[in-house]
Structure formats: structure tokens, C-alpha cells
Figure 1 (cartoon, rainbow, N blue to C red):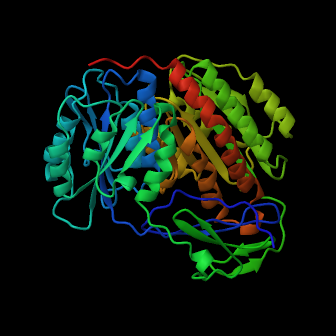
Figure 2 (cartoon, one colour):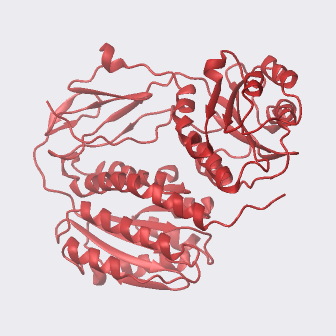
Figure 3 (cartoon, one colour):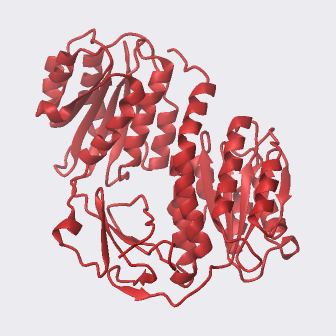
Length: 495
């Protein structure tokens, strides 16, 4: 018995989502069911940014926070997140009520700067009690159904007392995790943390390895049962366990039925037609080294497509202060020629005229004269790293009114409201933000779900291979991007 690649979606506790399978060596439709039995949480990070924490080390703390947030079910009725930044003074970076989406939280974390003075850990914990976990700041204090959790990260000995204030925090129902880094005072961590200490105190030798604690905290918010192992499931063919979930899948040559349990044999198919156009931001804020990563990203996606007159066609448009068609749909009939053209693409630099680029996509890229095929699904992927310098509303609306499936991918300083405006409905499944390329893999997953759902599930070869290649590509690119981002970023401001 064999089964082939499985696609996962960052899953919400409130519902279920279906994906689809195709023929051998392609993916199987799954129905992911969340088994995390955990209460929605009010989570506050309490982060030491004293002068002993160097700027590049503070970036590691921000990556750690982002990784934990990415694993949460974020929303006004689920988990809320706040961040307290402290040194000699305390700064409320954002409260539990400030952001209601994961994308908004990730952008806010990225903007945090170190304070670079003393280490008043007790003062920060007192602030958490009196302010961060208050009703006025978004804490759900009147309901017993919401956990209150604080994660304290520090690398030194505090300049004030922590024992009494930590005891008051725990007495107020706040569960405290204490993470110590480097030359931290372990006795202080034990005074801060909740019982049992073995579960609530962690130590890492340096900030460079703090990310290894991410999985622990994702599990802390989720109680997992392996129902596949116990046989407590209703999958007809294959049950697949993953942390916090199980999925039903089918054997090679079968597709999962709409009940999410039973399987039917695929009747055949050689891949669906698709007109795909990349709309790539080439503004000066991207920087040459990251533009090369984007080109590599495009080419490795092209590697995964079935390129032909009857299957996938690819077009590429770059924009900055103006718009330039690199090549139209159908100009190149094979992967080799497409990849060569992408490699030759010169970086435009200058501004960010996203509205003008969207208008070009509508008027030219998806026109018959430029290679688009009548009746073939049209997919546009807009990739940007900053705020548009022109008006995007009319063009974004027209693209969707014409039936184009629009996906908006924001990196770095991209604006969430603009991504939402570009994205097709349902908006939450068509726009993505990432600081370092991690969540860009969701593009392929959503394409698989949103386009293939209207086709024969056994005939979505191009889309499914697109998704699979994106998954592999992101794993290889994210380390390179993070290293470049840290190296080229400006030193944080000292307050």
C-alpha cells in the first residue's frame, strides 16, 4: 500500500477544508480535522530588550515569536496576542485587542525595536498584571473559558525583584513560562515560572537556537491525540496522523469523496489547462539579492508545471514605476525557454505602481492577443513588498469581476489592506503576508483548493504539482532569505 504527497492548510479550529487528489504520483484529496482540544488563549509575550541583547539577537527573538504566532488559531473569539517590550522601562508594543489577524500580528512583530537599556523584569511582569491582562486592553477577564498565558524571555539578572510580583501574577490566574538565554540567572527563572517548573522553565545557550523552543509552545496550546494509532477514526483507506490533526487519504489512483472518509477510483486525465501570470514587484525596496531569490522561486515553480499548448501556460510581468511585460502567455512552449527568460529578467528598481500593474494584467496579460485561451482558468499572483504608490481599488475590483482568481502575496513592508483589496473572495484564503517567505507556501495550497474544486479532482495535475514544488522551494529558500534580511537590515533604533 502506498500513498503520495499530502497537502496541509494552516487550519482553523472552527471548520473543515477539503483538498483534492489526482492520478498516481500526485496528491490525494484530504479532509483535515483538527484534534487540538484547547481553550482559546490570551497570550502576552514579555520580551527583554536590554543592552545585553544585541540587535541581531533581538531579531532571533522576533523570529521565535513569529513562529509561535504562526502556529496559533488567531481571532477575536480564539487566541489573542500582545507583546510587552522591556528594558529599564516598559513599552506596550501592542495589546491583546490590537490585532485580530495573524498577518497583522506578524507585521507588528517585525516592526518591534530593542530598547537597549537596563533589565527591569519585575516592572514588566507588574505591567502585565495591571495593564496587559486587563479588560481595557482586550483580555477576557470575565470568562473562565479563556486561558491567560505569559511567555517571559530574558538573558540576564533583573535589576528589580521578581519573586513577589510573579507570585501575584500566578495568583491572578496567569500561567507563566520563563525562557532564559545565555548567562541568565536560573534562580530568577524559577521564581518567575508557574508550577511544575520542569514544564515552565526553559534554557537555551544562545539566541541563535531559541527557535528550537517553537514546537514546545505550539504543543503547549494543543493537546494531541493519535486517533489513527488507536483506530478511533472512520477513514476507508488511509489515516494519517500529524501534530494536532489527522487526515483521511486514499491509495494511489483514488480520490477522496465529499464525505471525507470514503474513496473512489480516478477515471483518468492528463492535467488541466491553466493560464498563470506572475505580477512581480521590482521596486528598489526589494533589493537585488532578494530579486534573485524571487527569480529562482519562479523558475522552480515552472519546473513543476506541465507546460504545453493544452496544459499550463505562464506569463511574467514586472513592475516598479512603470510596467514591463517580460513575456506573454504562450510565448514559450517549454520549461527550458521560460526559465531562460526568467533568468534574463533585469531588475527595474524605482517605485511601486501596483495599480498600474493590475490594469496591465487586465488589459493585456489575459487578452487573447497576448496568448490567453478562452474558457481556460485565469490565475494571477501579485507579489509585492511595499505600499502601492498609486490607486489600486478599481483595477483590483475589475480583475475579480472578470473572473480572474487573484492571489496577493505580501513580503516585508507590504500593506495588509492592499493585499485584501487585490485578493479574490473569500479574501482570507487569497491573501498572504510573510516576513521571510515561510507562509508563501499557502499560495499553492489555496490554488489547489480554489481552482481544482471546480474541475474533475483527478485532472488537476498542473495545480497540484505547482503546490508541491512551492512546498519544497520554501524550505530551501527561507534560510537564505532570513540571513540576507538580518545582514542587510538597518540597526534598530535605540530609545
